Image (cartoon, rainbow, N blue to C red):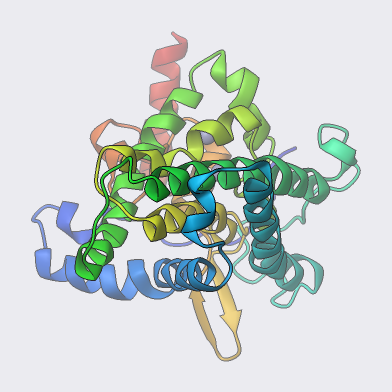
Length: 315
Ligand SMILES: [Zn+2]
Ligand SMILES: [Zn+2]
């Protein structure tokens, strides 16, 4: 179905360090005030709470059982119902800010046969909670099992764990670009990733509404720490971040209205990927798309360039 034009933010720019001339001081300000605040900081705080108060003790995982995985799966379901469901309720059921800052005027699809149960939200919840939450639980349990048996390298100092936690955002920029780029190659696209792309007009539950095959790749970030030293907290953080951060970014709203103020909400960069498919495969933090010629900043010029590329590849 065609897009119903809504709010269009100003065209995007790459982070200051990647602009020409490069601006390192601006970059630090950008990282603190734009990138870390509020969302990235929130994922770290939520992961710390989840790890300390809602995750079984590591000693339990020395002998990994189905019940341990089930427990983490249940924890993931509750966490996602609160964080993702909360945004869905506030923005799409209560419609607290109407269509202010909404990328599209129309609401999520109901009565559409291409979605499971004929309903976009129910379909998205199913893939998120069952496949997403389940595979994330399995991966976290495997990492815990390996840490419990001291089979993989582990960081010991709190400072090193903190530094590595911040590094996860950059590592994921590369990891996400690679697996997402691969998923756009046929037949992987047709078999797996097309399921996520049925959501052109996205909501919070669309974020990790993916085919299980895509979850296998997308959620594999913690396995980077089979070779790089990490920690059990970092394993939990990776999965909390992967499960939750796509919910505001797919929320459909560029900014969230909170009383008299607004905070950063959706990810316009990824929203353009859902509109046009062949642009913005990565994340804005590390602008691989800029370097590989698939960057769309939302401007008319970028749009013409994209159409030219399409004409060339069609010809
Ligand atoms: Zn997406
Ligand atoms: Zn895609």
